Image (cartoon, rainbow, N blue to C red; front, side, top):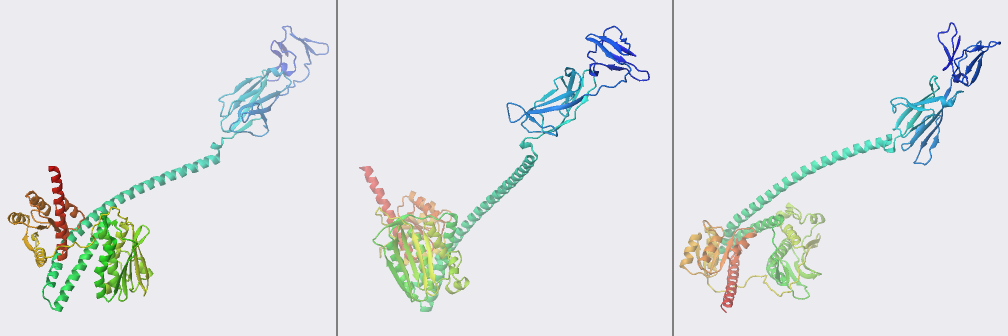
Length: 607
């Protein structure tokens, strides 16, 4: 049975479950038939009237289905590297896109005998499109940019009202930018791990440095506390040792001034020498403590180096004679000159070197040479002793070290501090000390000191103060230790002076009120009223006689404090008769100078 309608030609064959519809896609020129029924011709063919003409078909032929259309992808284009025109790329296999590619254009065509205008297309990109994207009859899809990854593009089309036809899926691989590539991500992960490790290392290093800093601070505090304790201990030791040493050395000097037989004199000399050696050890230890604490004060004053070395030569010559040694002194300065420096410390260095030379040289000679070397003064001390080996020279200037250790100490004595102190003092004066020695030939020490030349013309004596002989003085001695008081009194009385002792400050004030004195010797550490307060009281009461501080204090600030308190002189214990006489003369001279300046200033005011 055949039927014509405005929507096409329909046919139903008995025994078939469906009605077949024929339209333009089946070869009809027009699918809109008129309302007139079809007519069967004499040859069995059917004629049907359409809006465009007459359609003739043979109903006896079997129903052959219209061949299915085939959908193909014609081209794939993309804008690459910002080119003005798109580039066509192969699409037989997976389409490879770079990270910067854009405007992906896919063109599909439906291959059929049907009018192309009736075709309809749709696209879907898995993971990119939520549903099918209708593109109408154009057959093209433009995708601005796909994210990195693998995508599948599905394309379908149909002709008119026909069934959808699918093209083979198009696989598109969008490569990531270099910073998102696998090697880049691995490198980034490695860099991140490296930075993490560096941060952890830096954190641990910072914590460790903080801990080290805290430990260093604690060590520094402990070291400072230990240094303060050591300085206090050494100062106390020096004070406590100097006071009895005054008795030992003073009594030995008083004994030597009495009639003694040879054996007794030898015993007293041994006592004095032992006491002198002990005092030198204490002084060396105190000097080292001052150097370590940075409290070594160098007194920069003009002095004559030729006079200083000549006095040392005069002092050492008799000592060398007693050892059976020749002593040579050579002054090779081109002309007399004055230099600025600490004459006391220079003398201390040379005494240590000369003392060692005389001690170790068993025969031959010891020499002291003074010369000028560029801007430095050069002092050379040479001896013909046993010499020093290379190994011993390496540790020669270390503390408590001697040439052959205990063997040298047992044979020659000494503590091993003299050369160490000489080295420290030389360095403190920005100088240099060197040693040159050969075993069996001798040793030479060279000391170079950068002492500037004095242009002011000031001359300060480096030797002993000349004191008038036979001038008896009335002296007030304020000392709480009876042994020290007896020693000082005996030494001064032996020089023809009259001494009035006082055991404390109140007794001294009482004696000063009753008697006139030429000079007063005050201990600084007195009971009830110390030496500083006593000096102030004496000045307030109008006493103008010179004041000489005699103390066992070893600190460097004691002399400055004494000068500020009004003392005219300063002397450390232990003392000898010569030291007392020199200090008294210096104090009287200083007091006279101060009085003269005061009188001159007063007369100027009156005028």
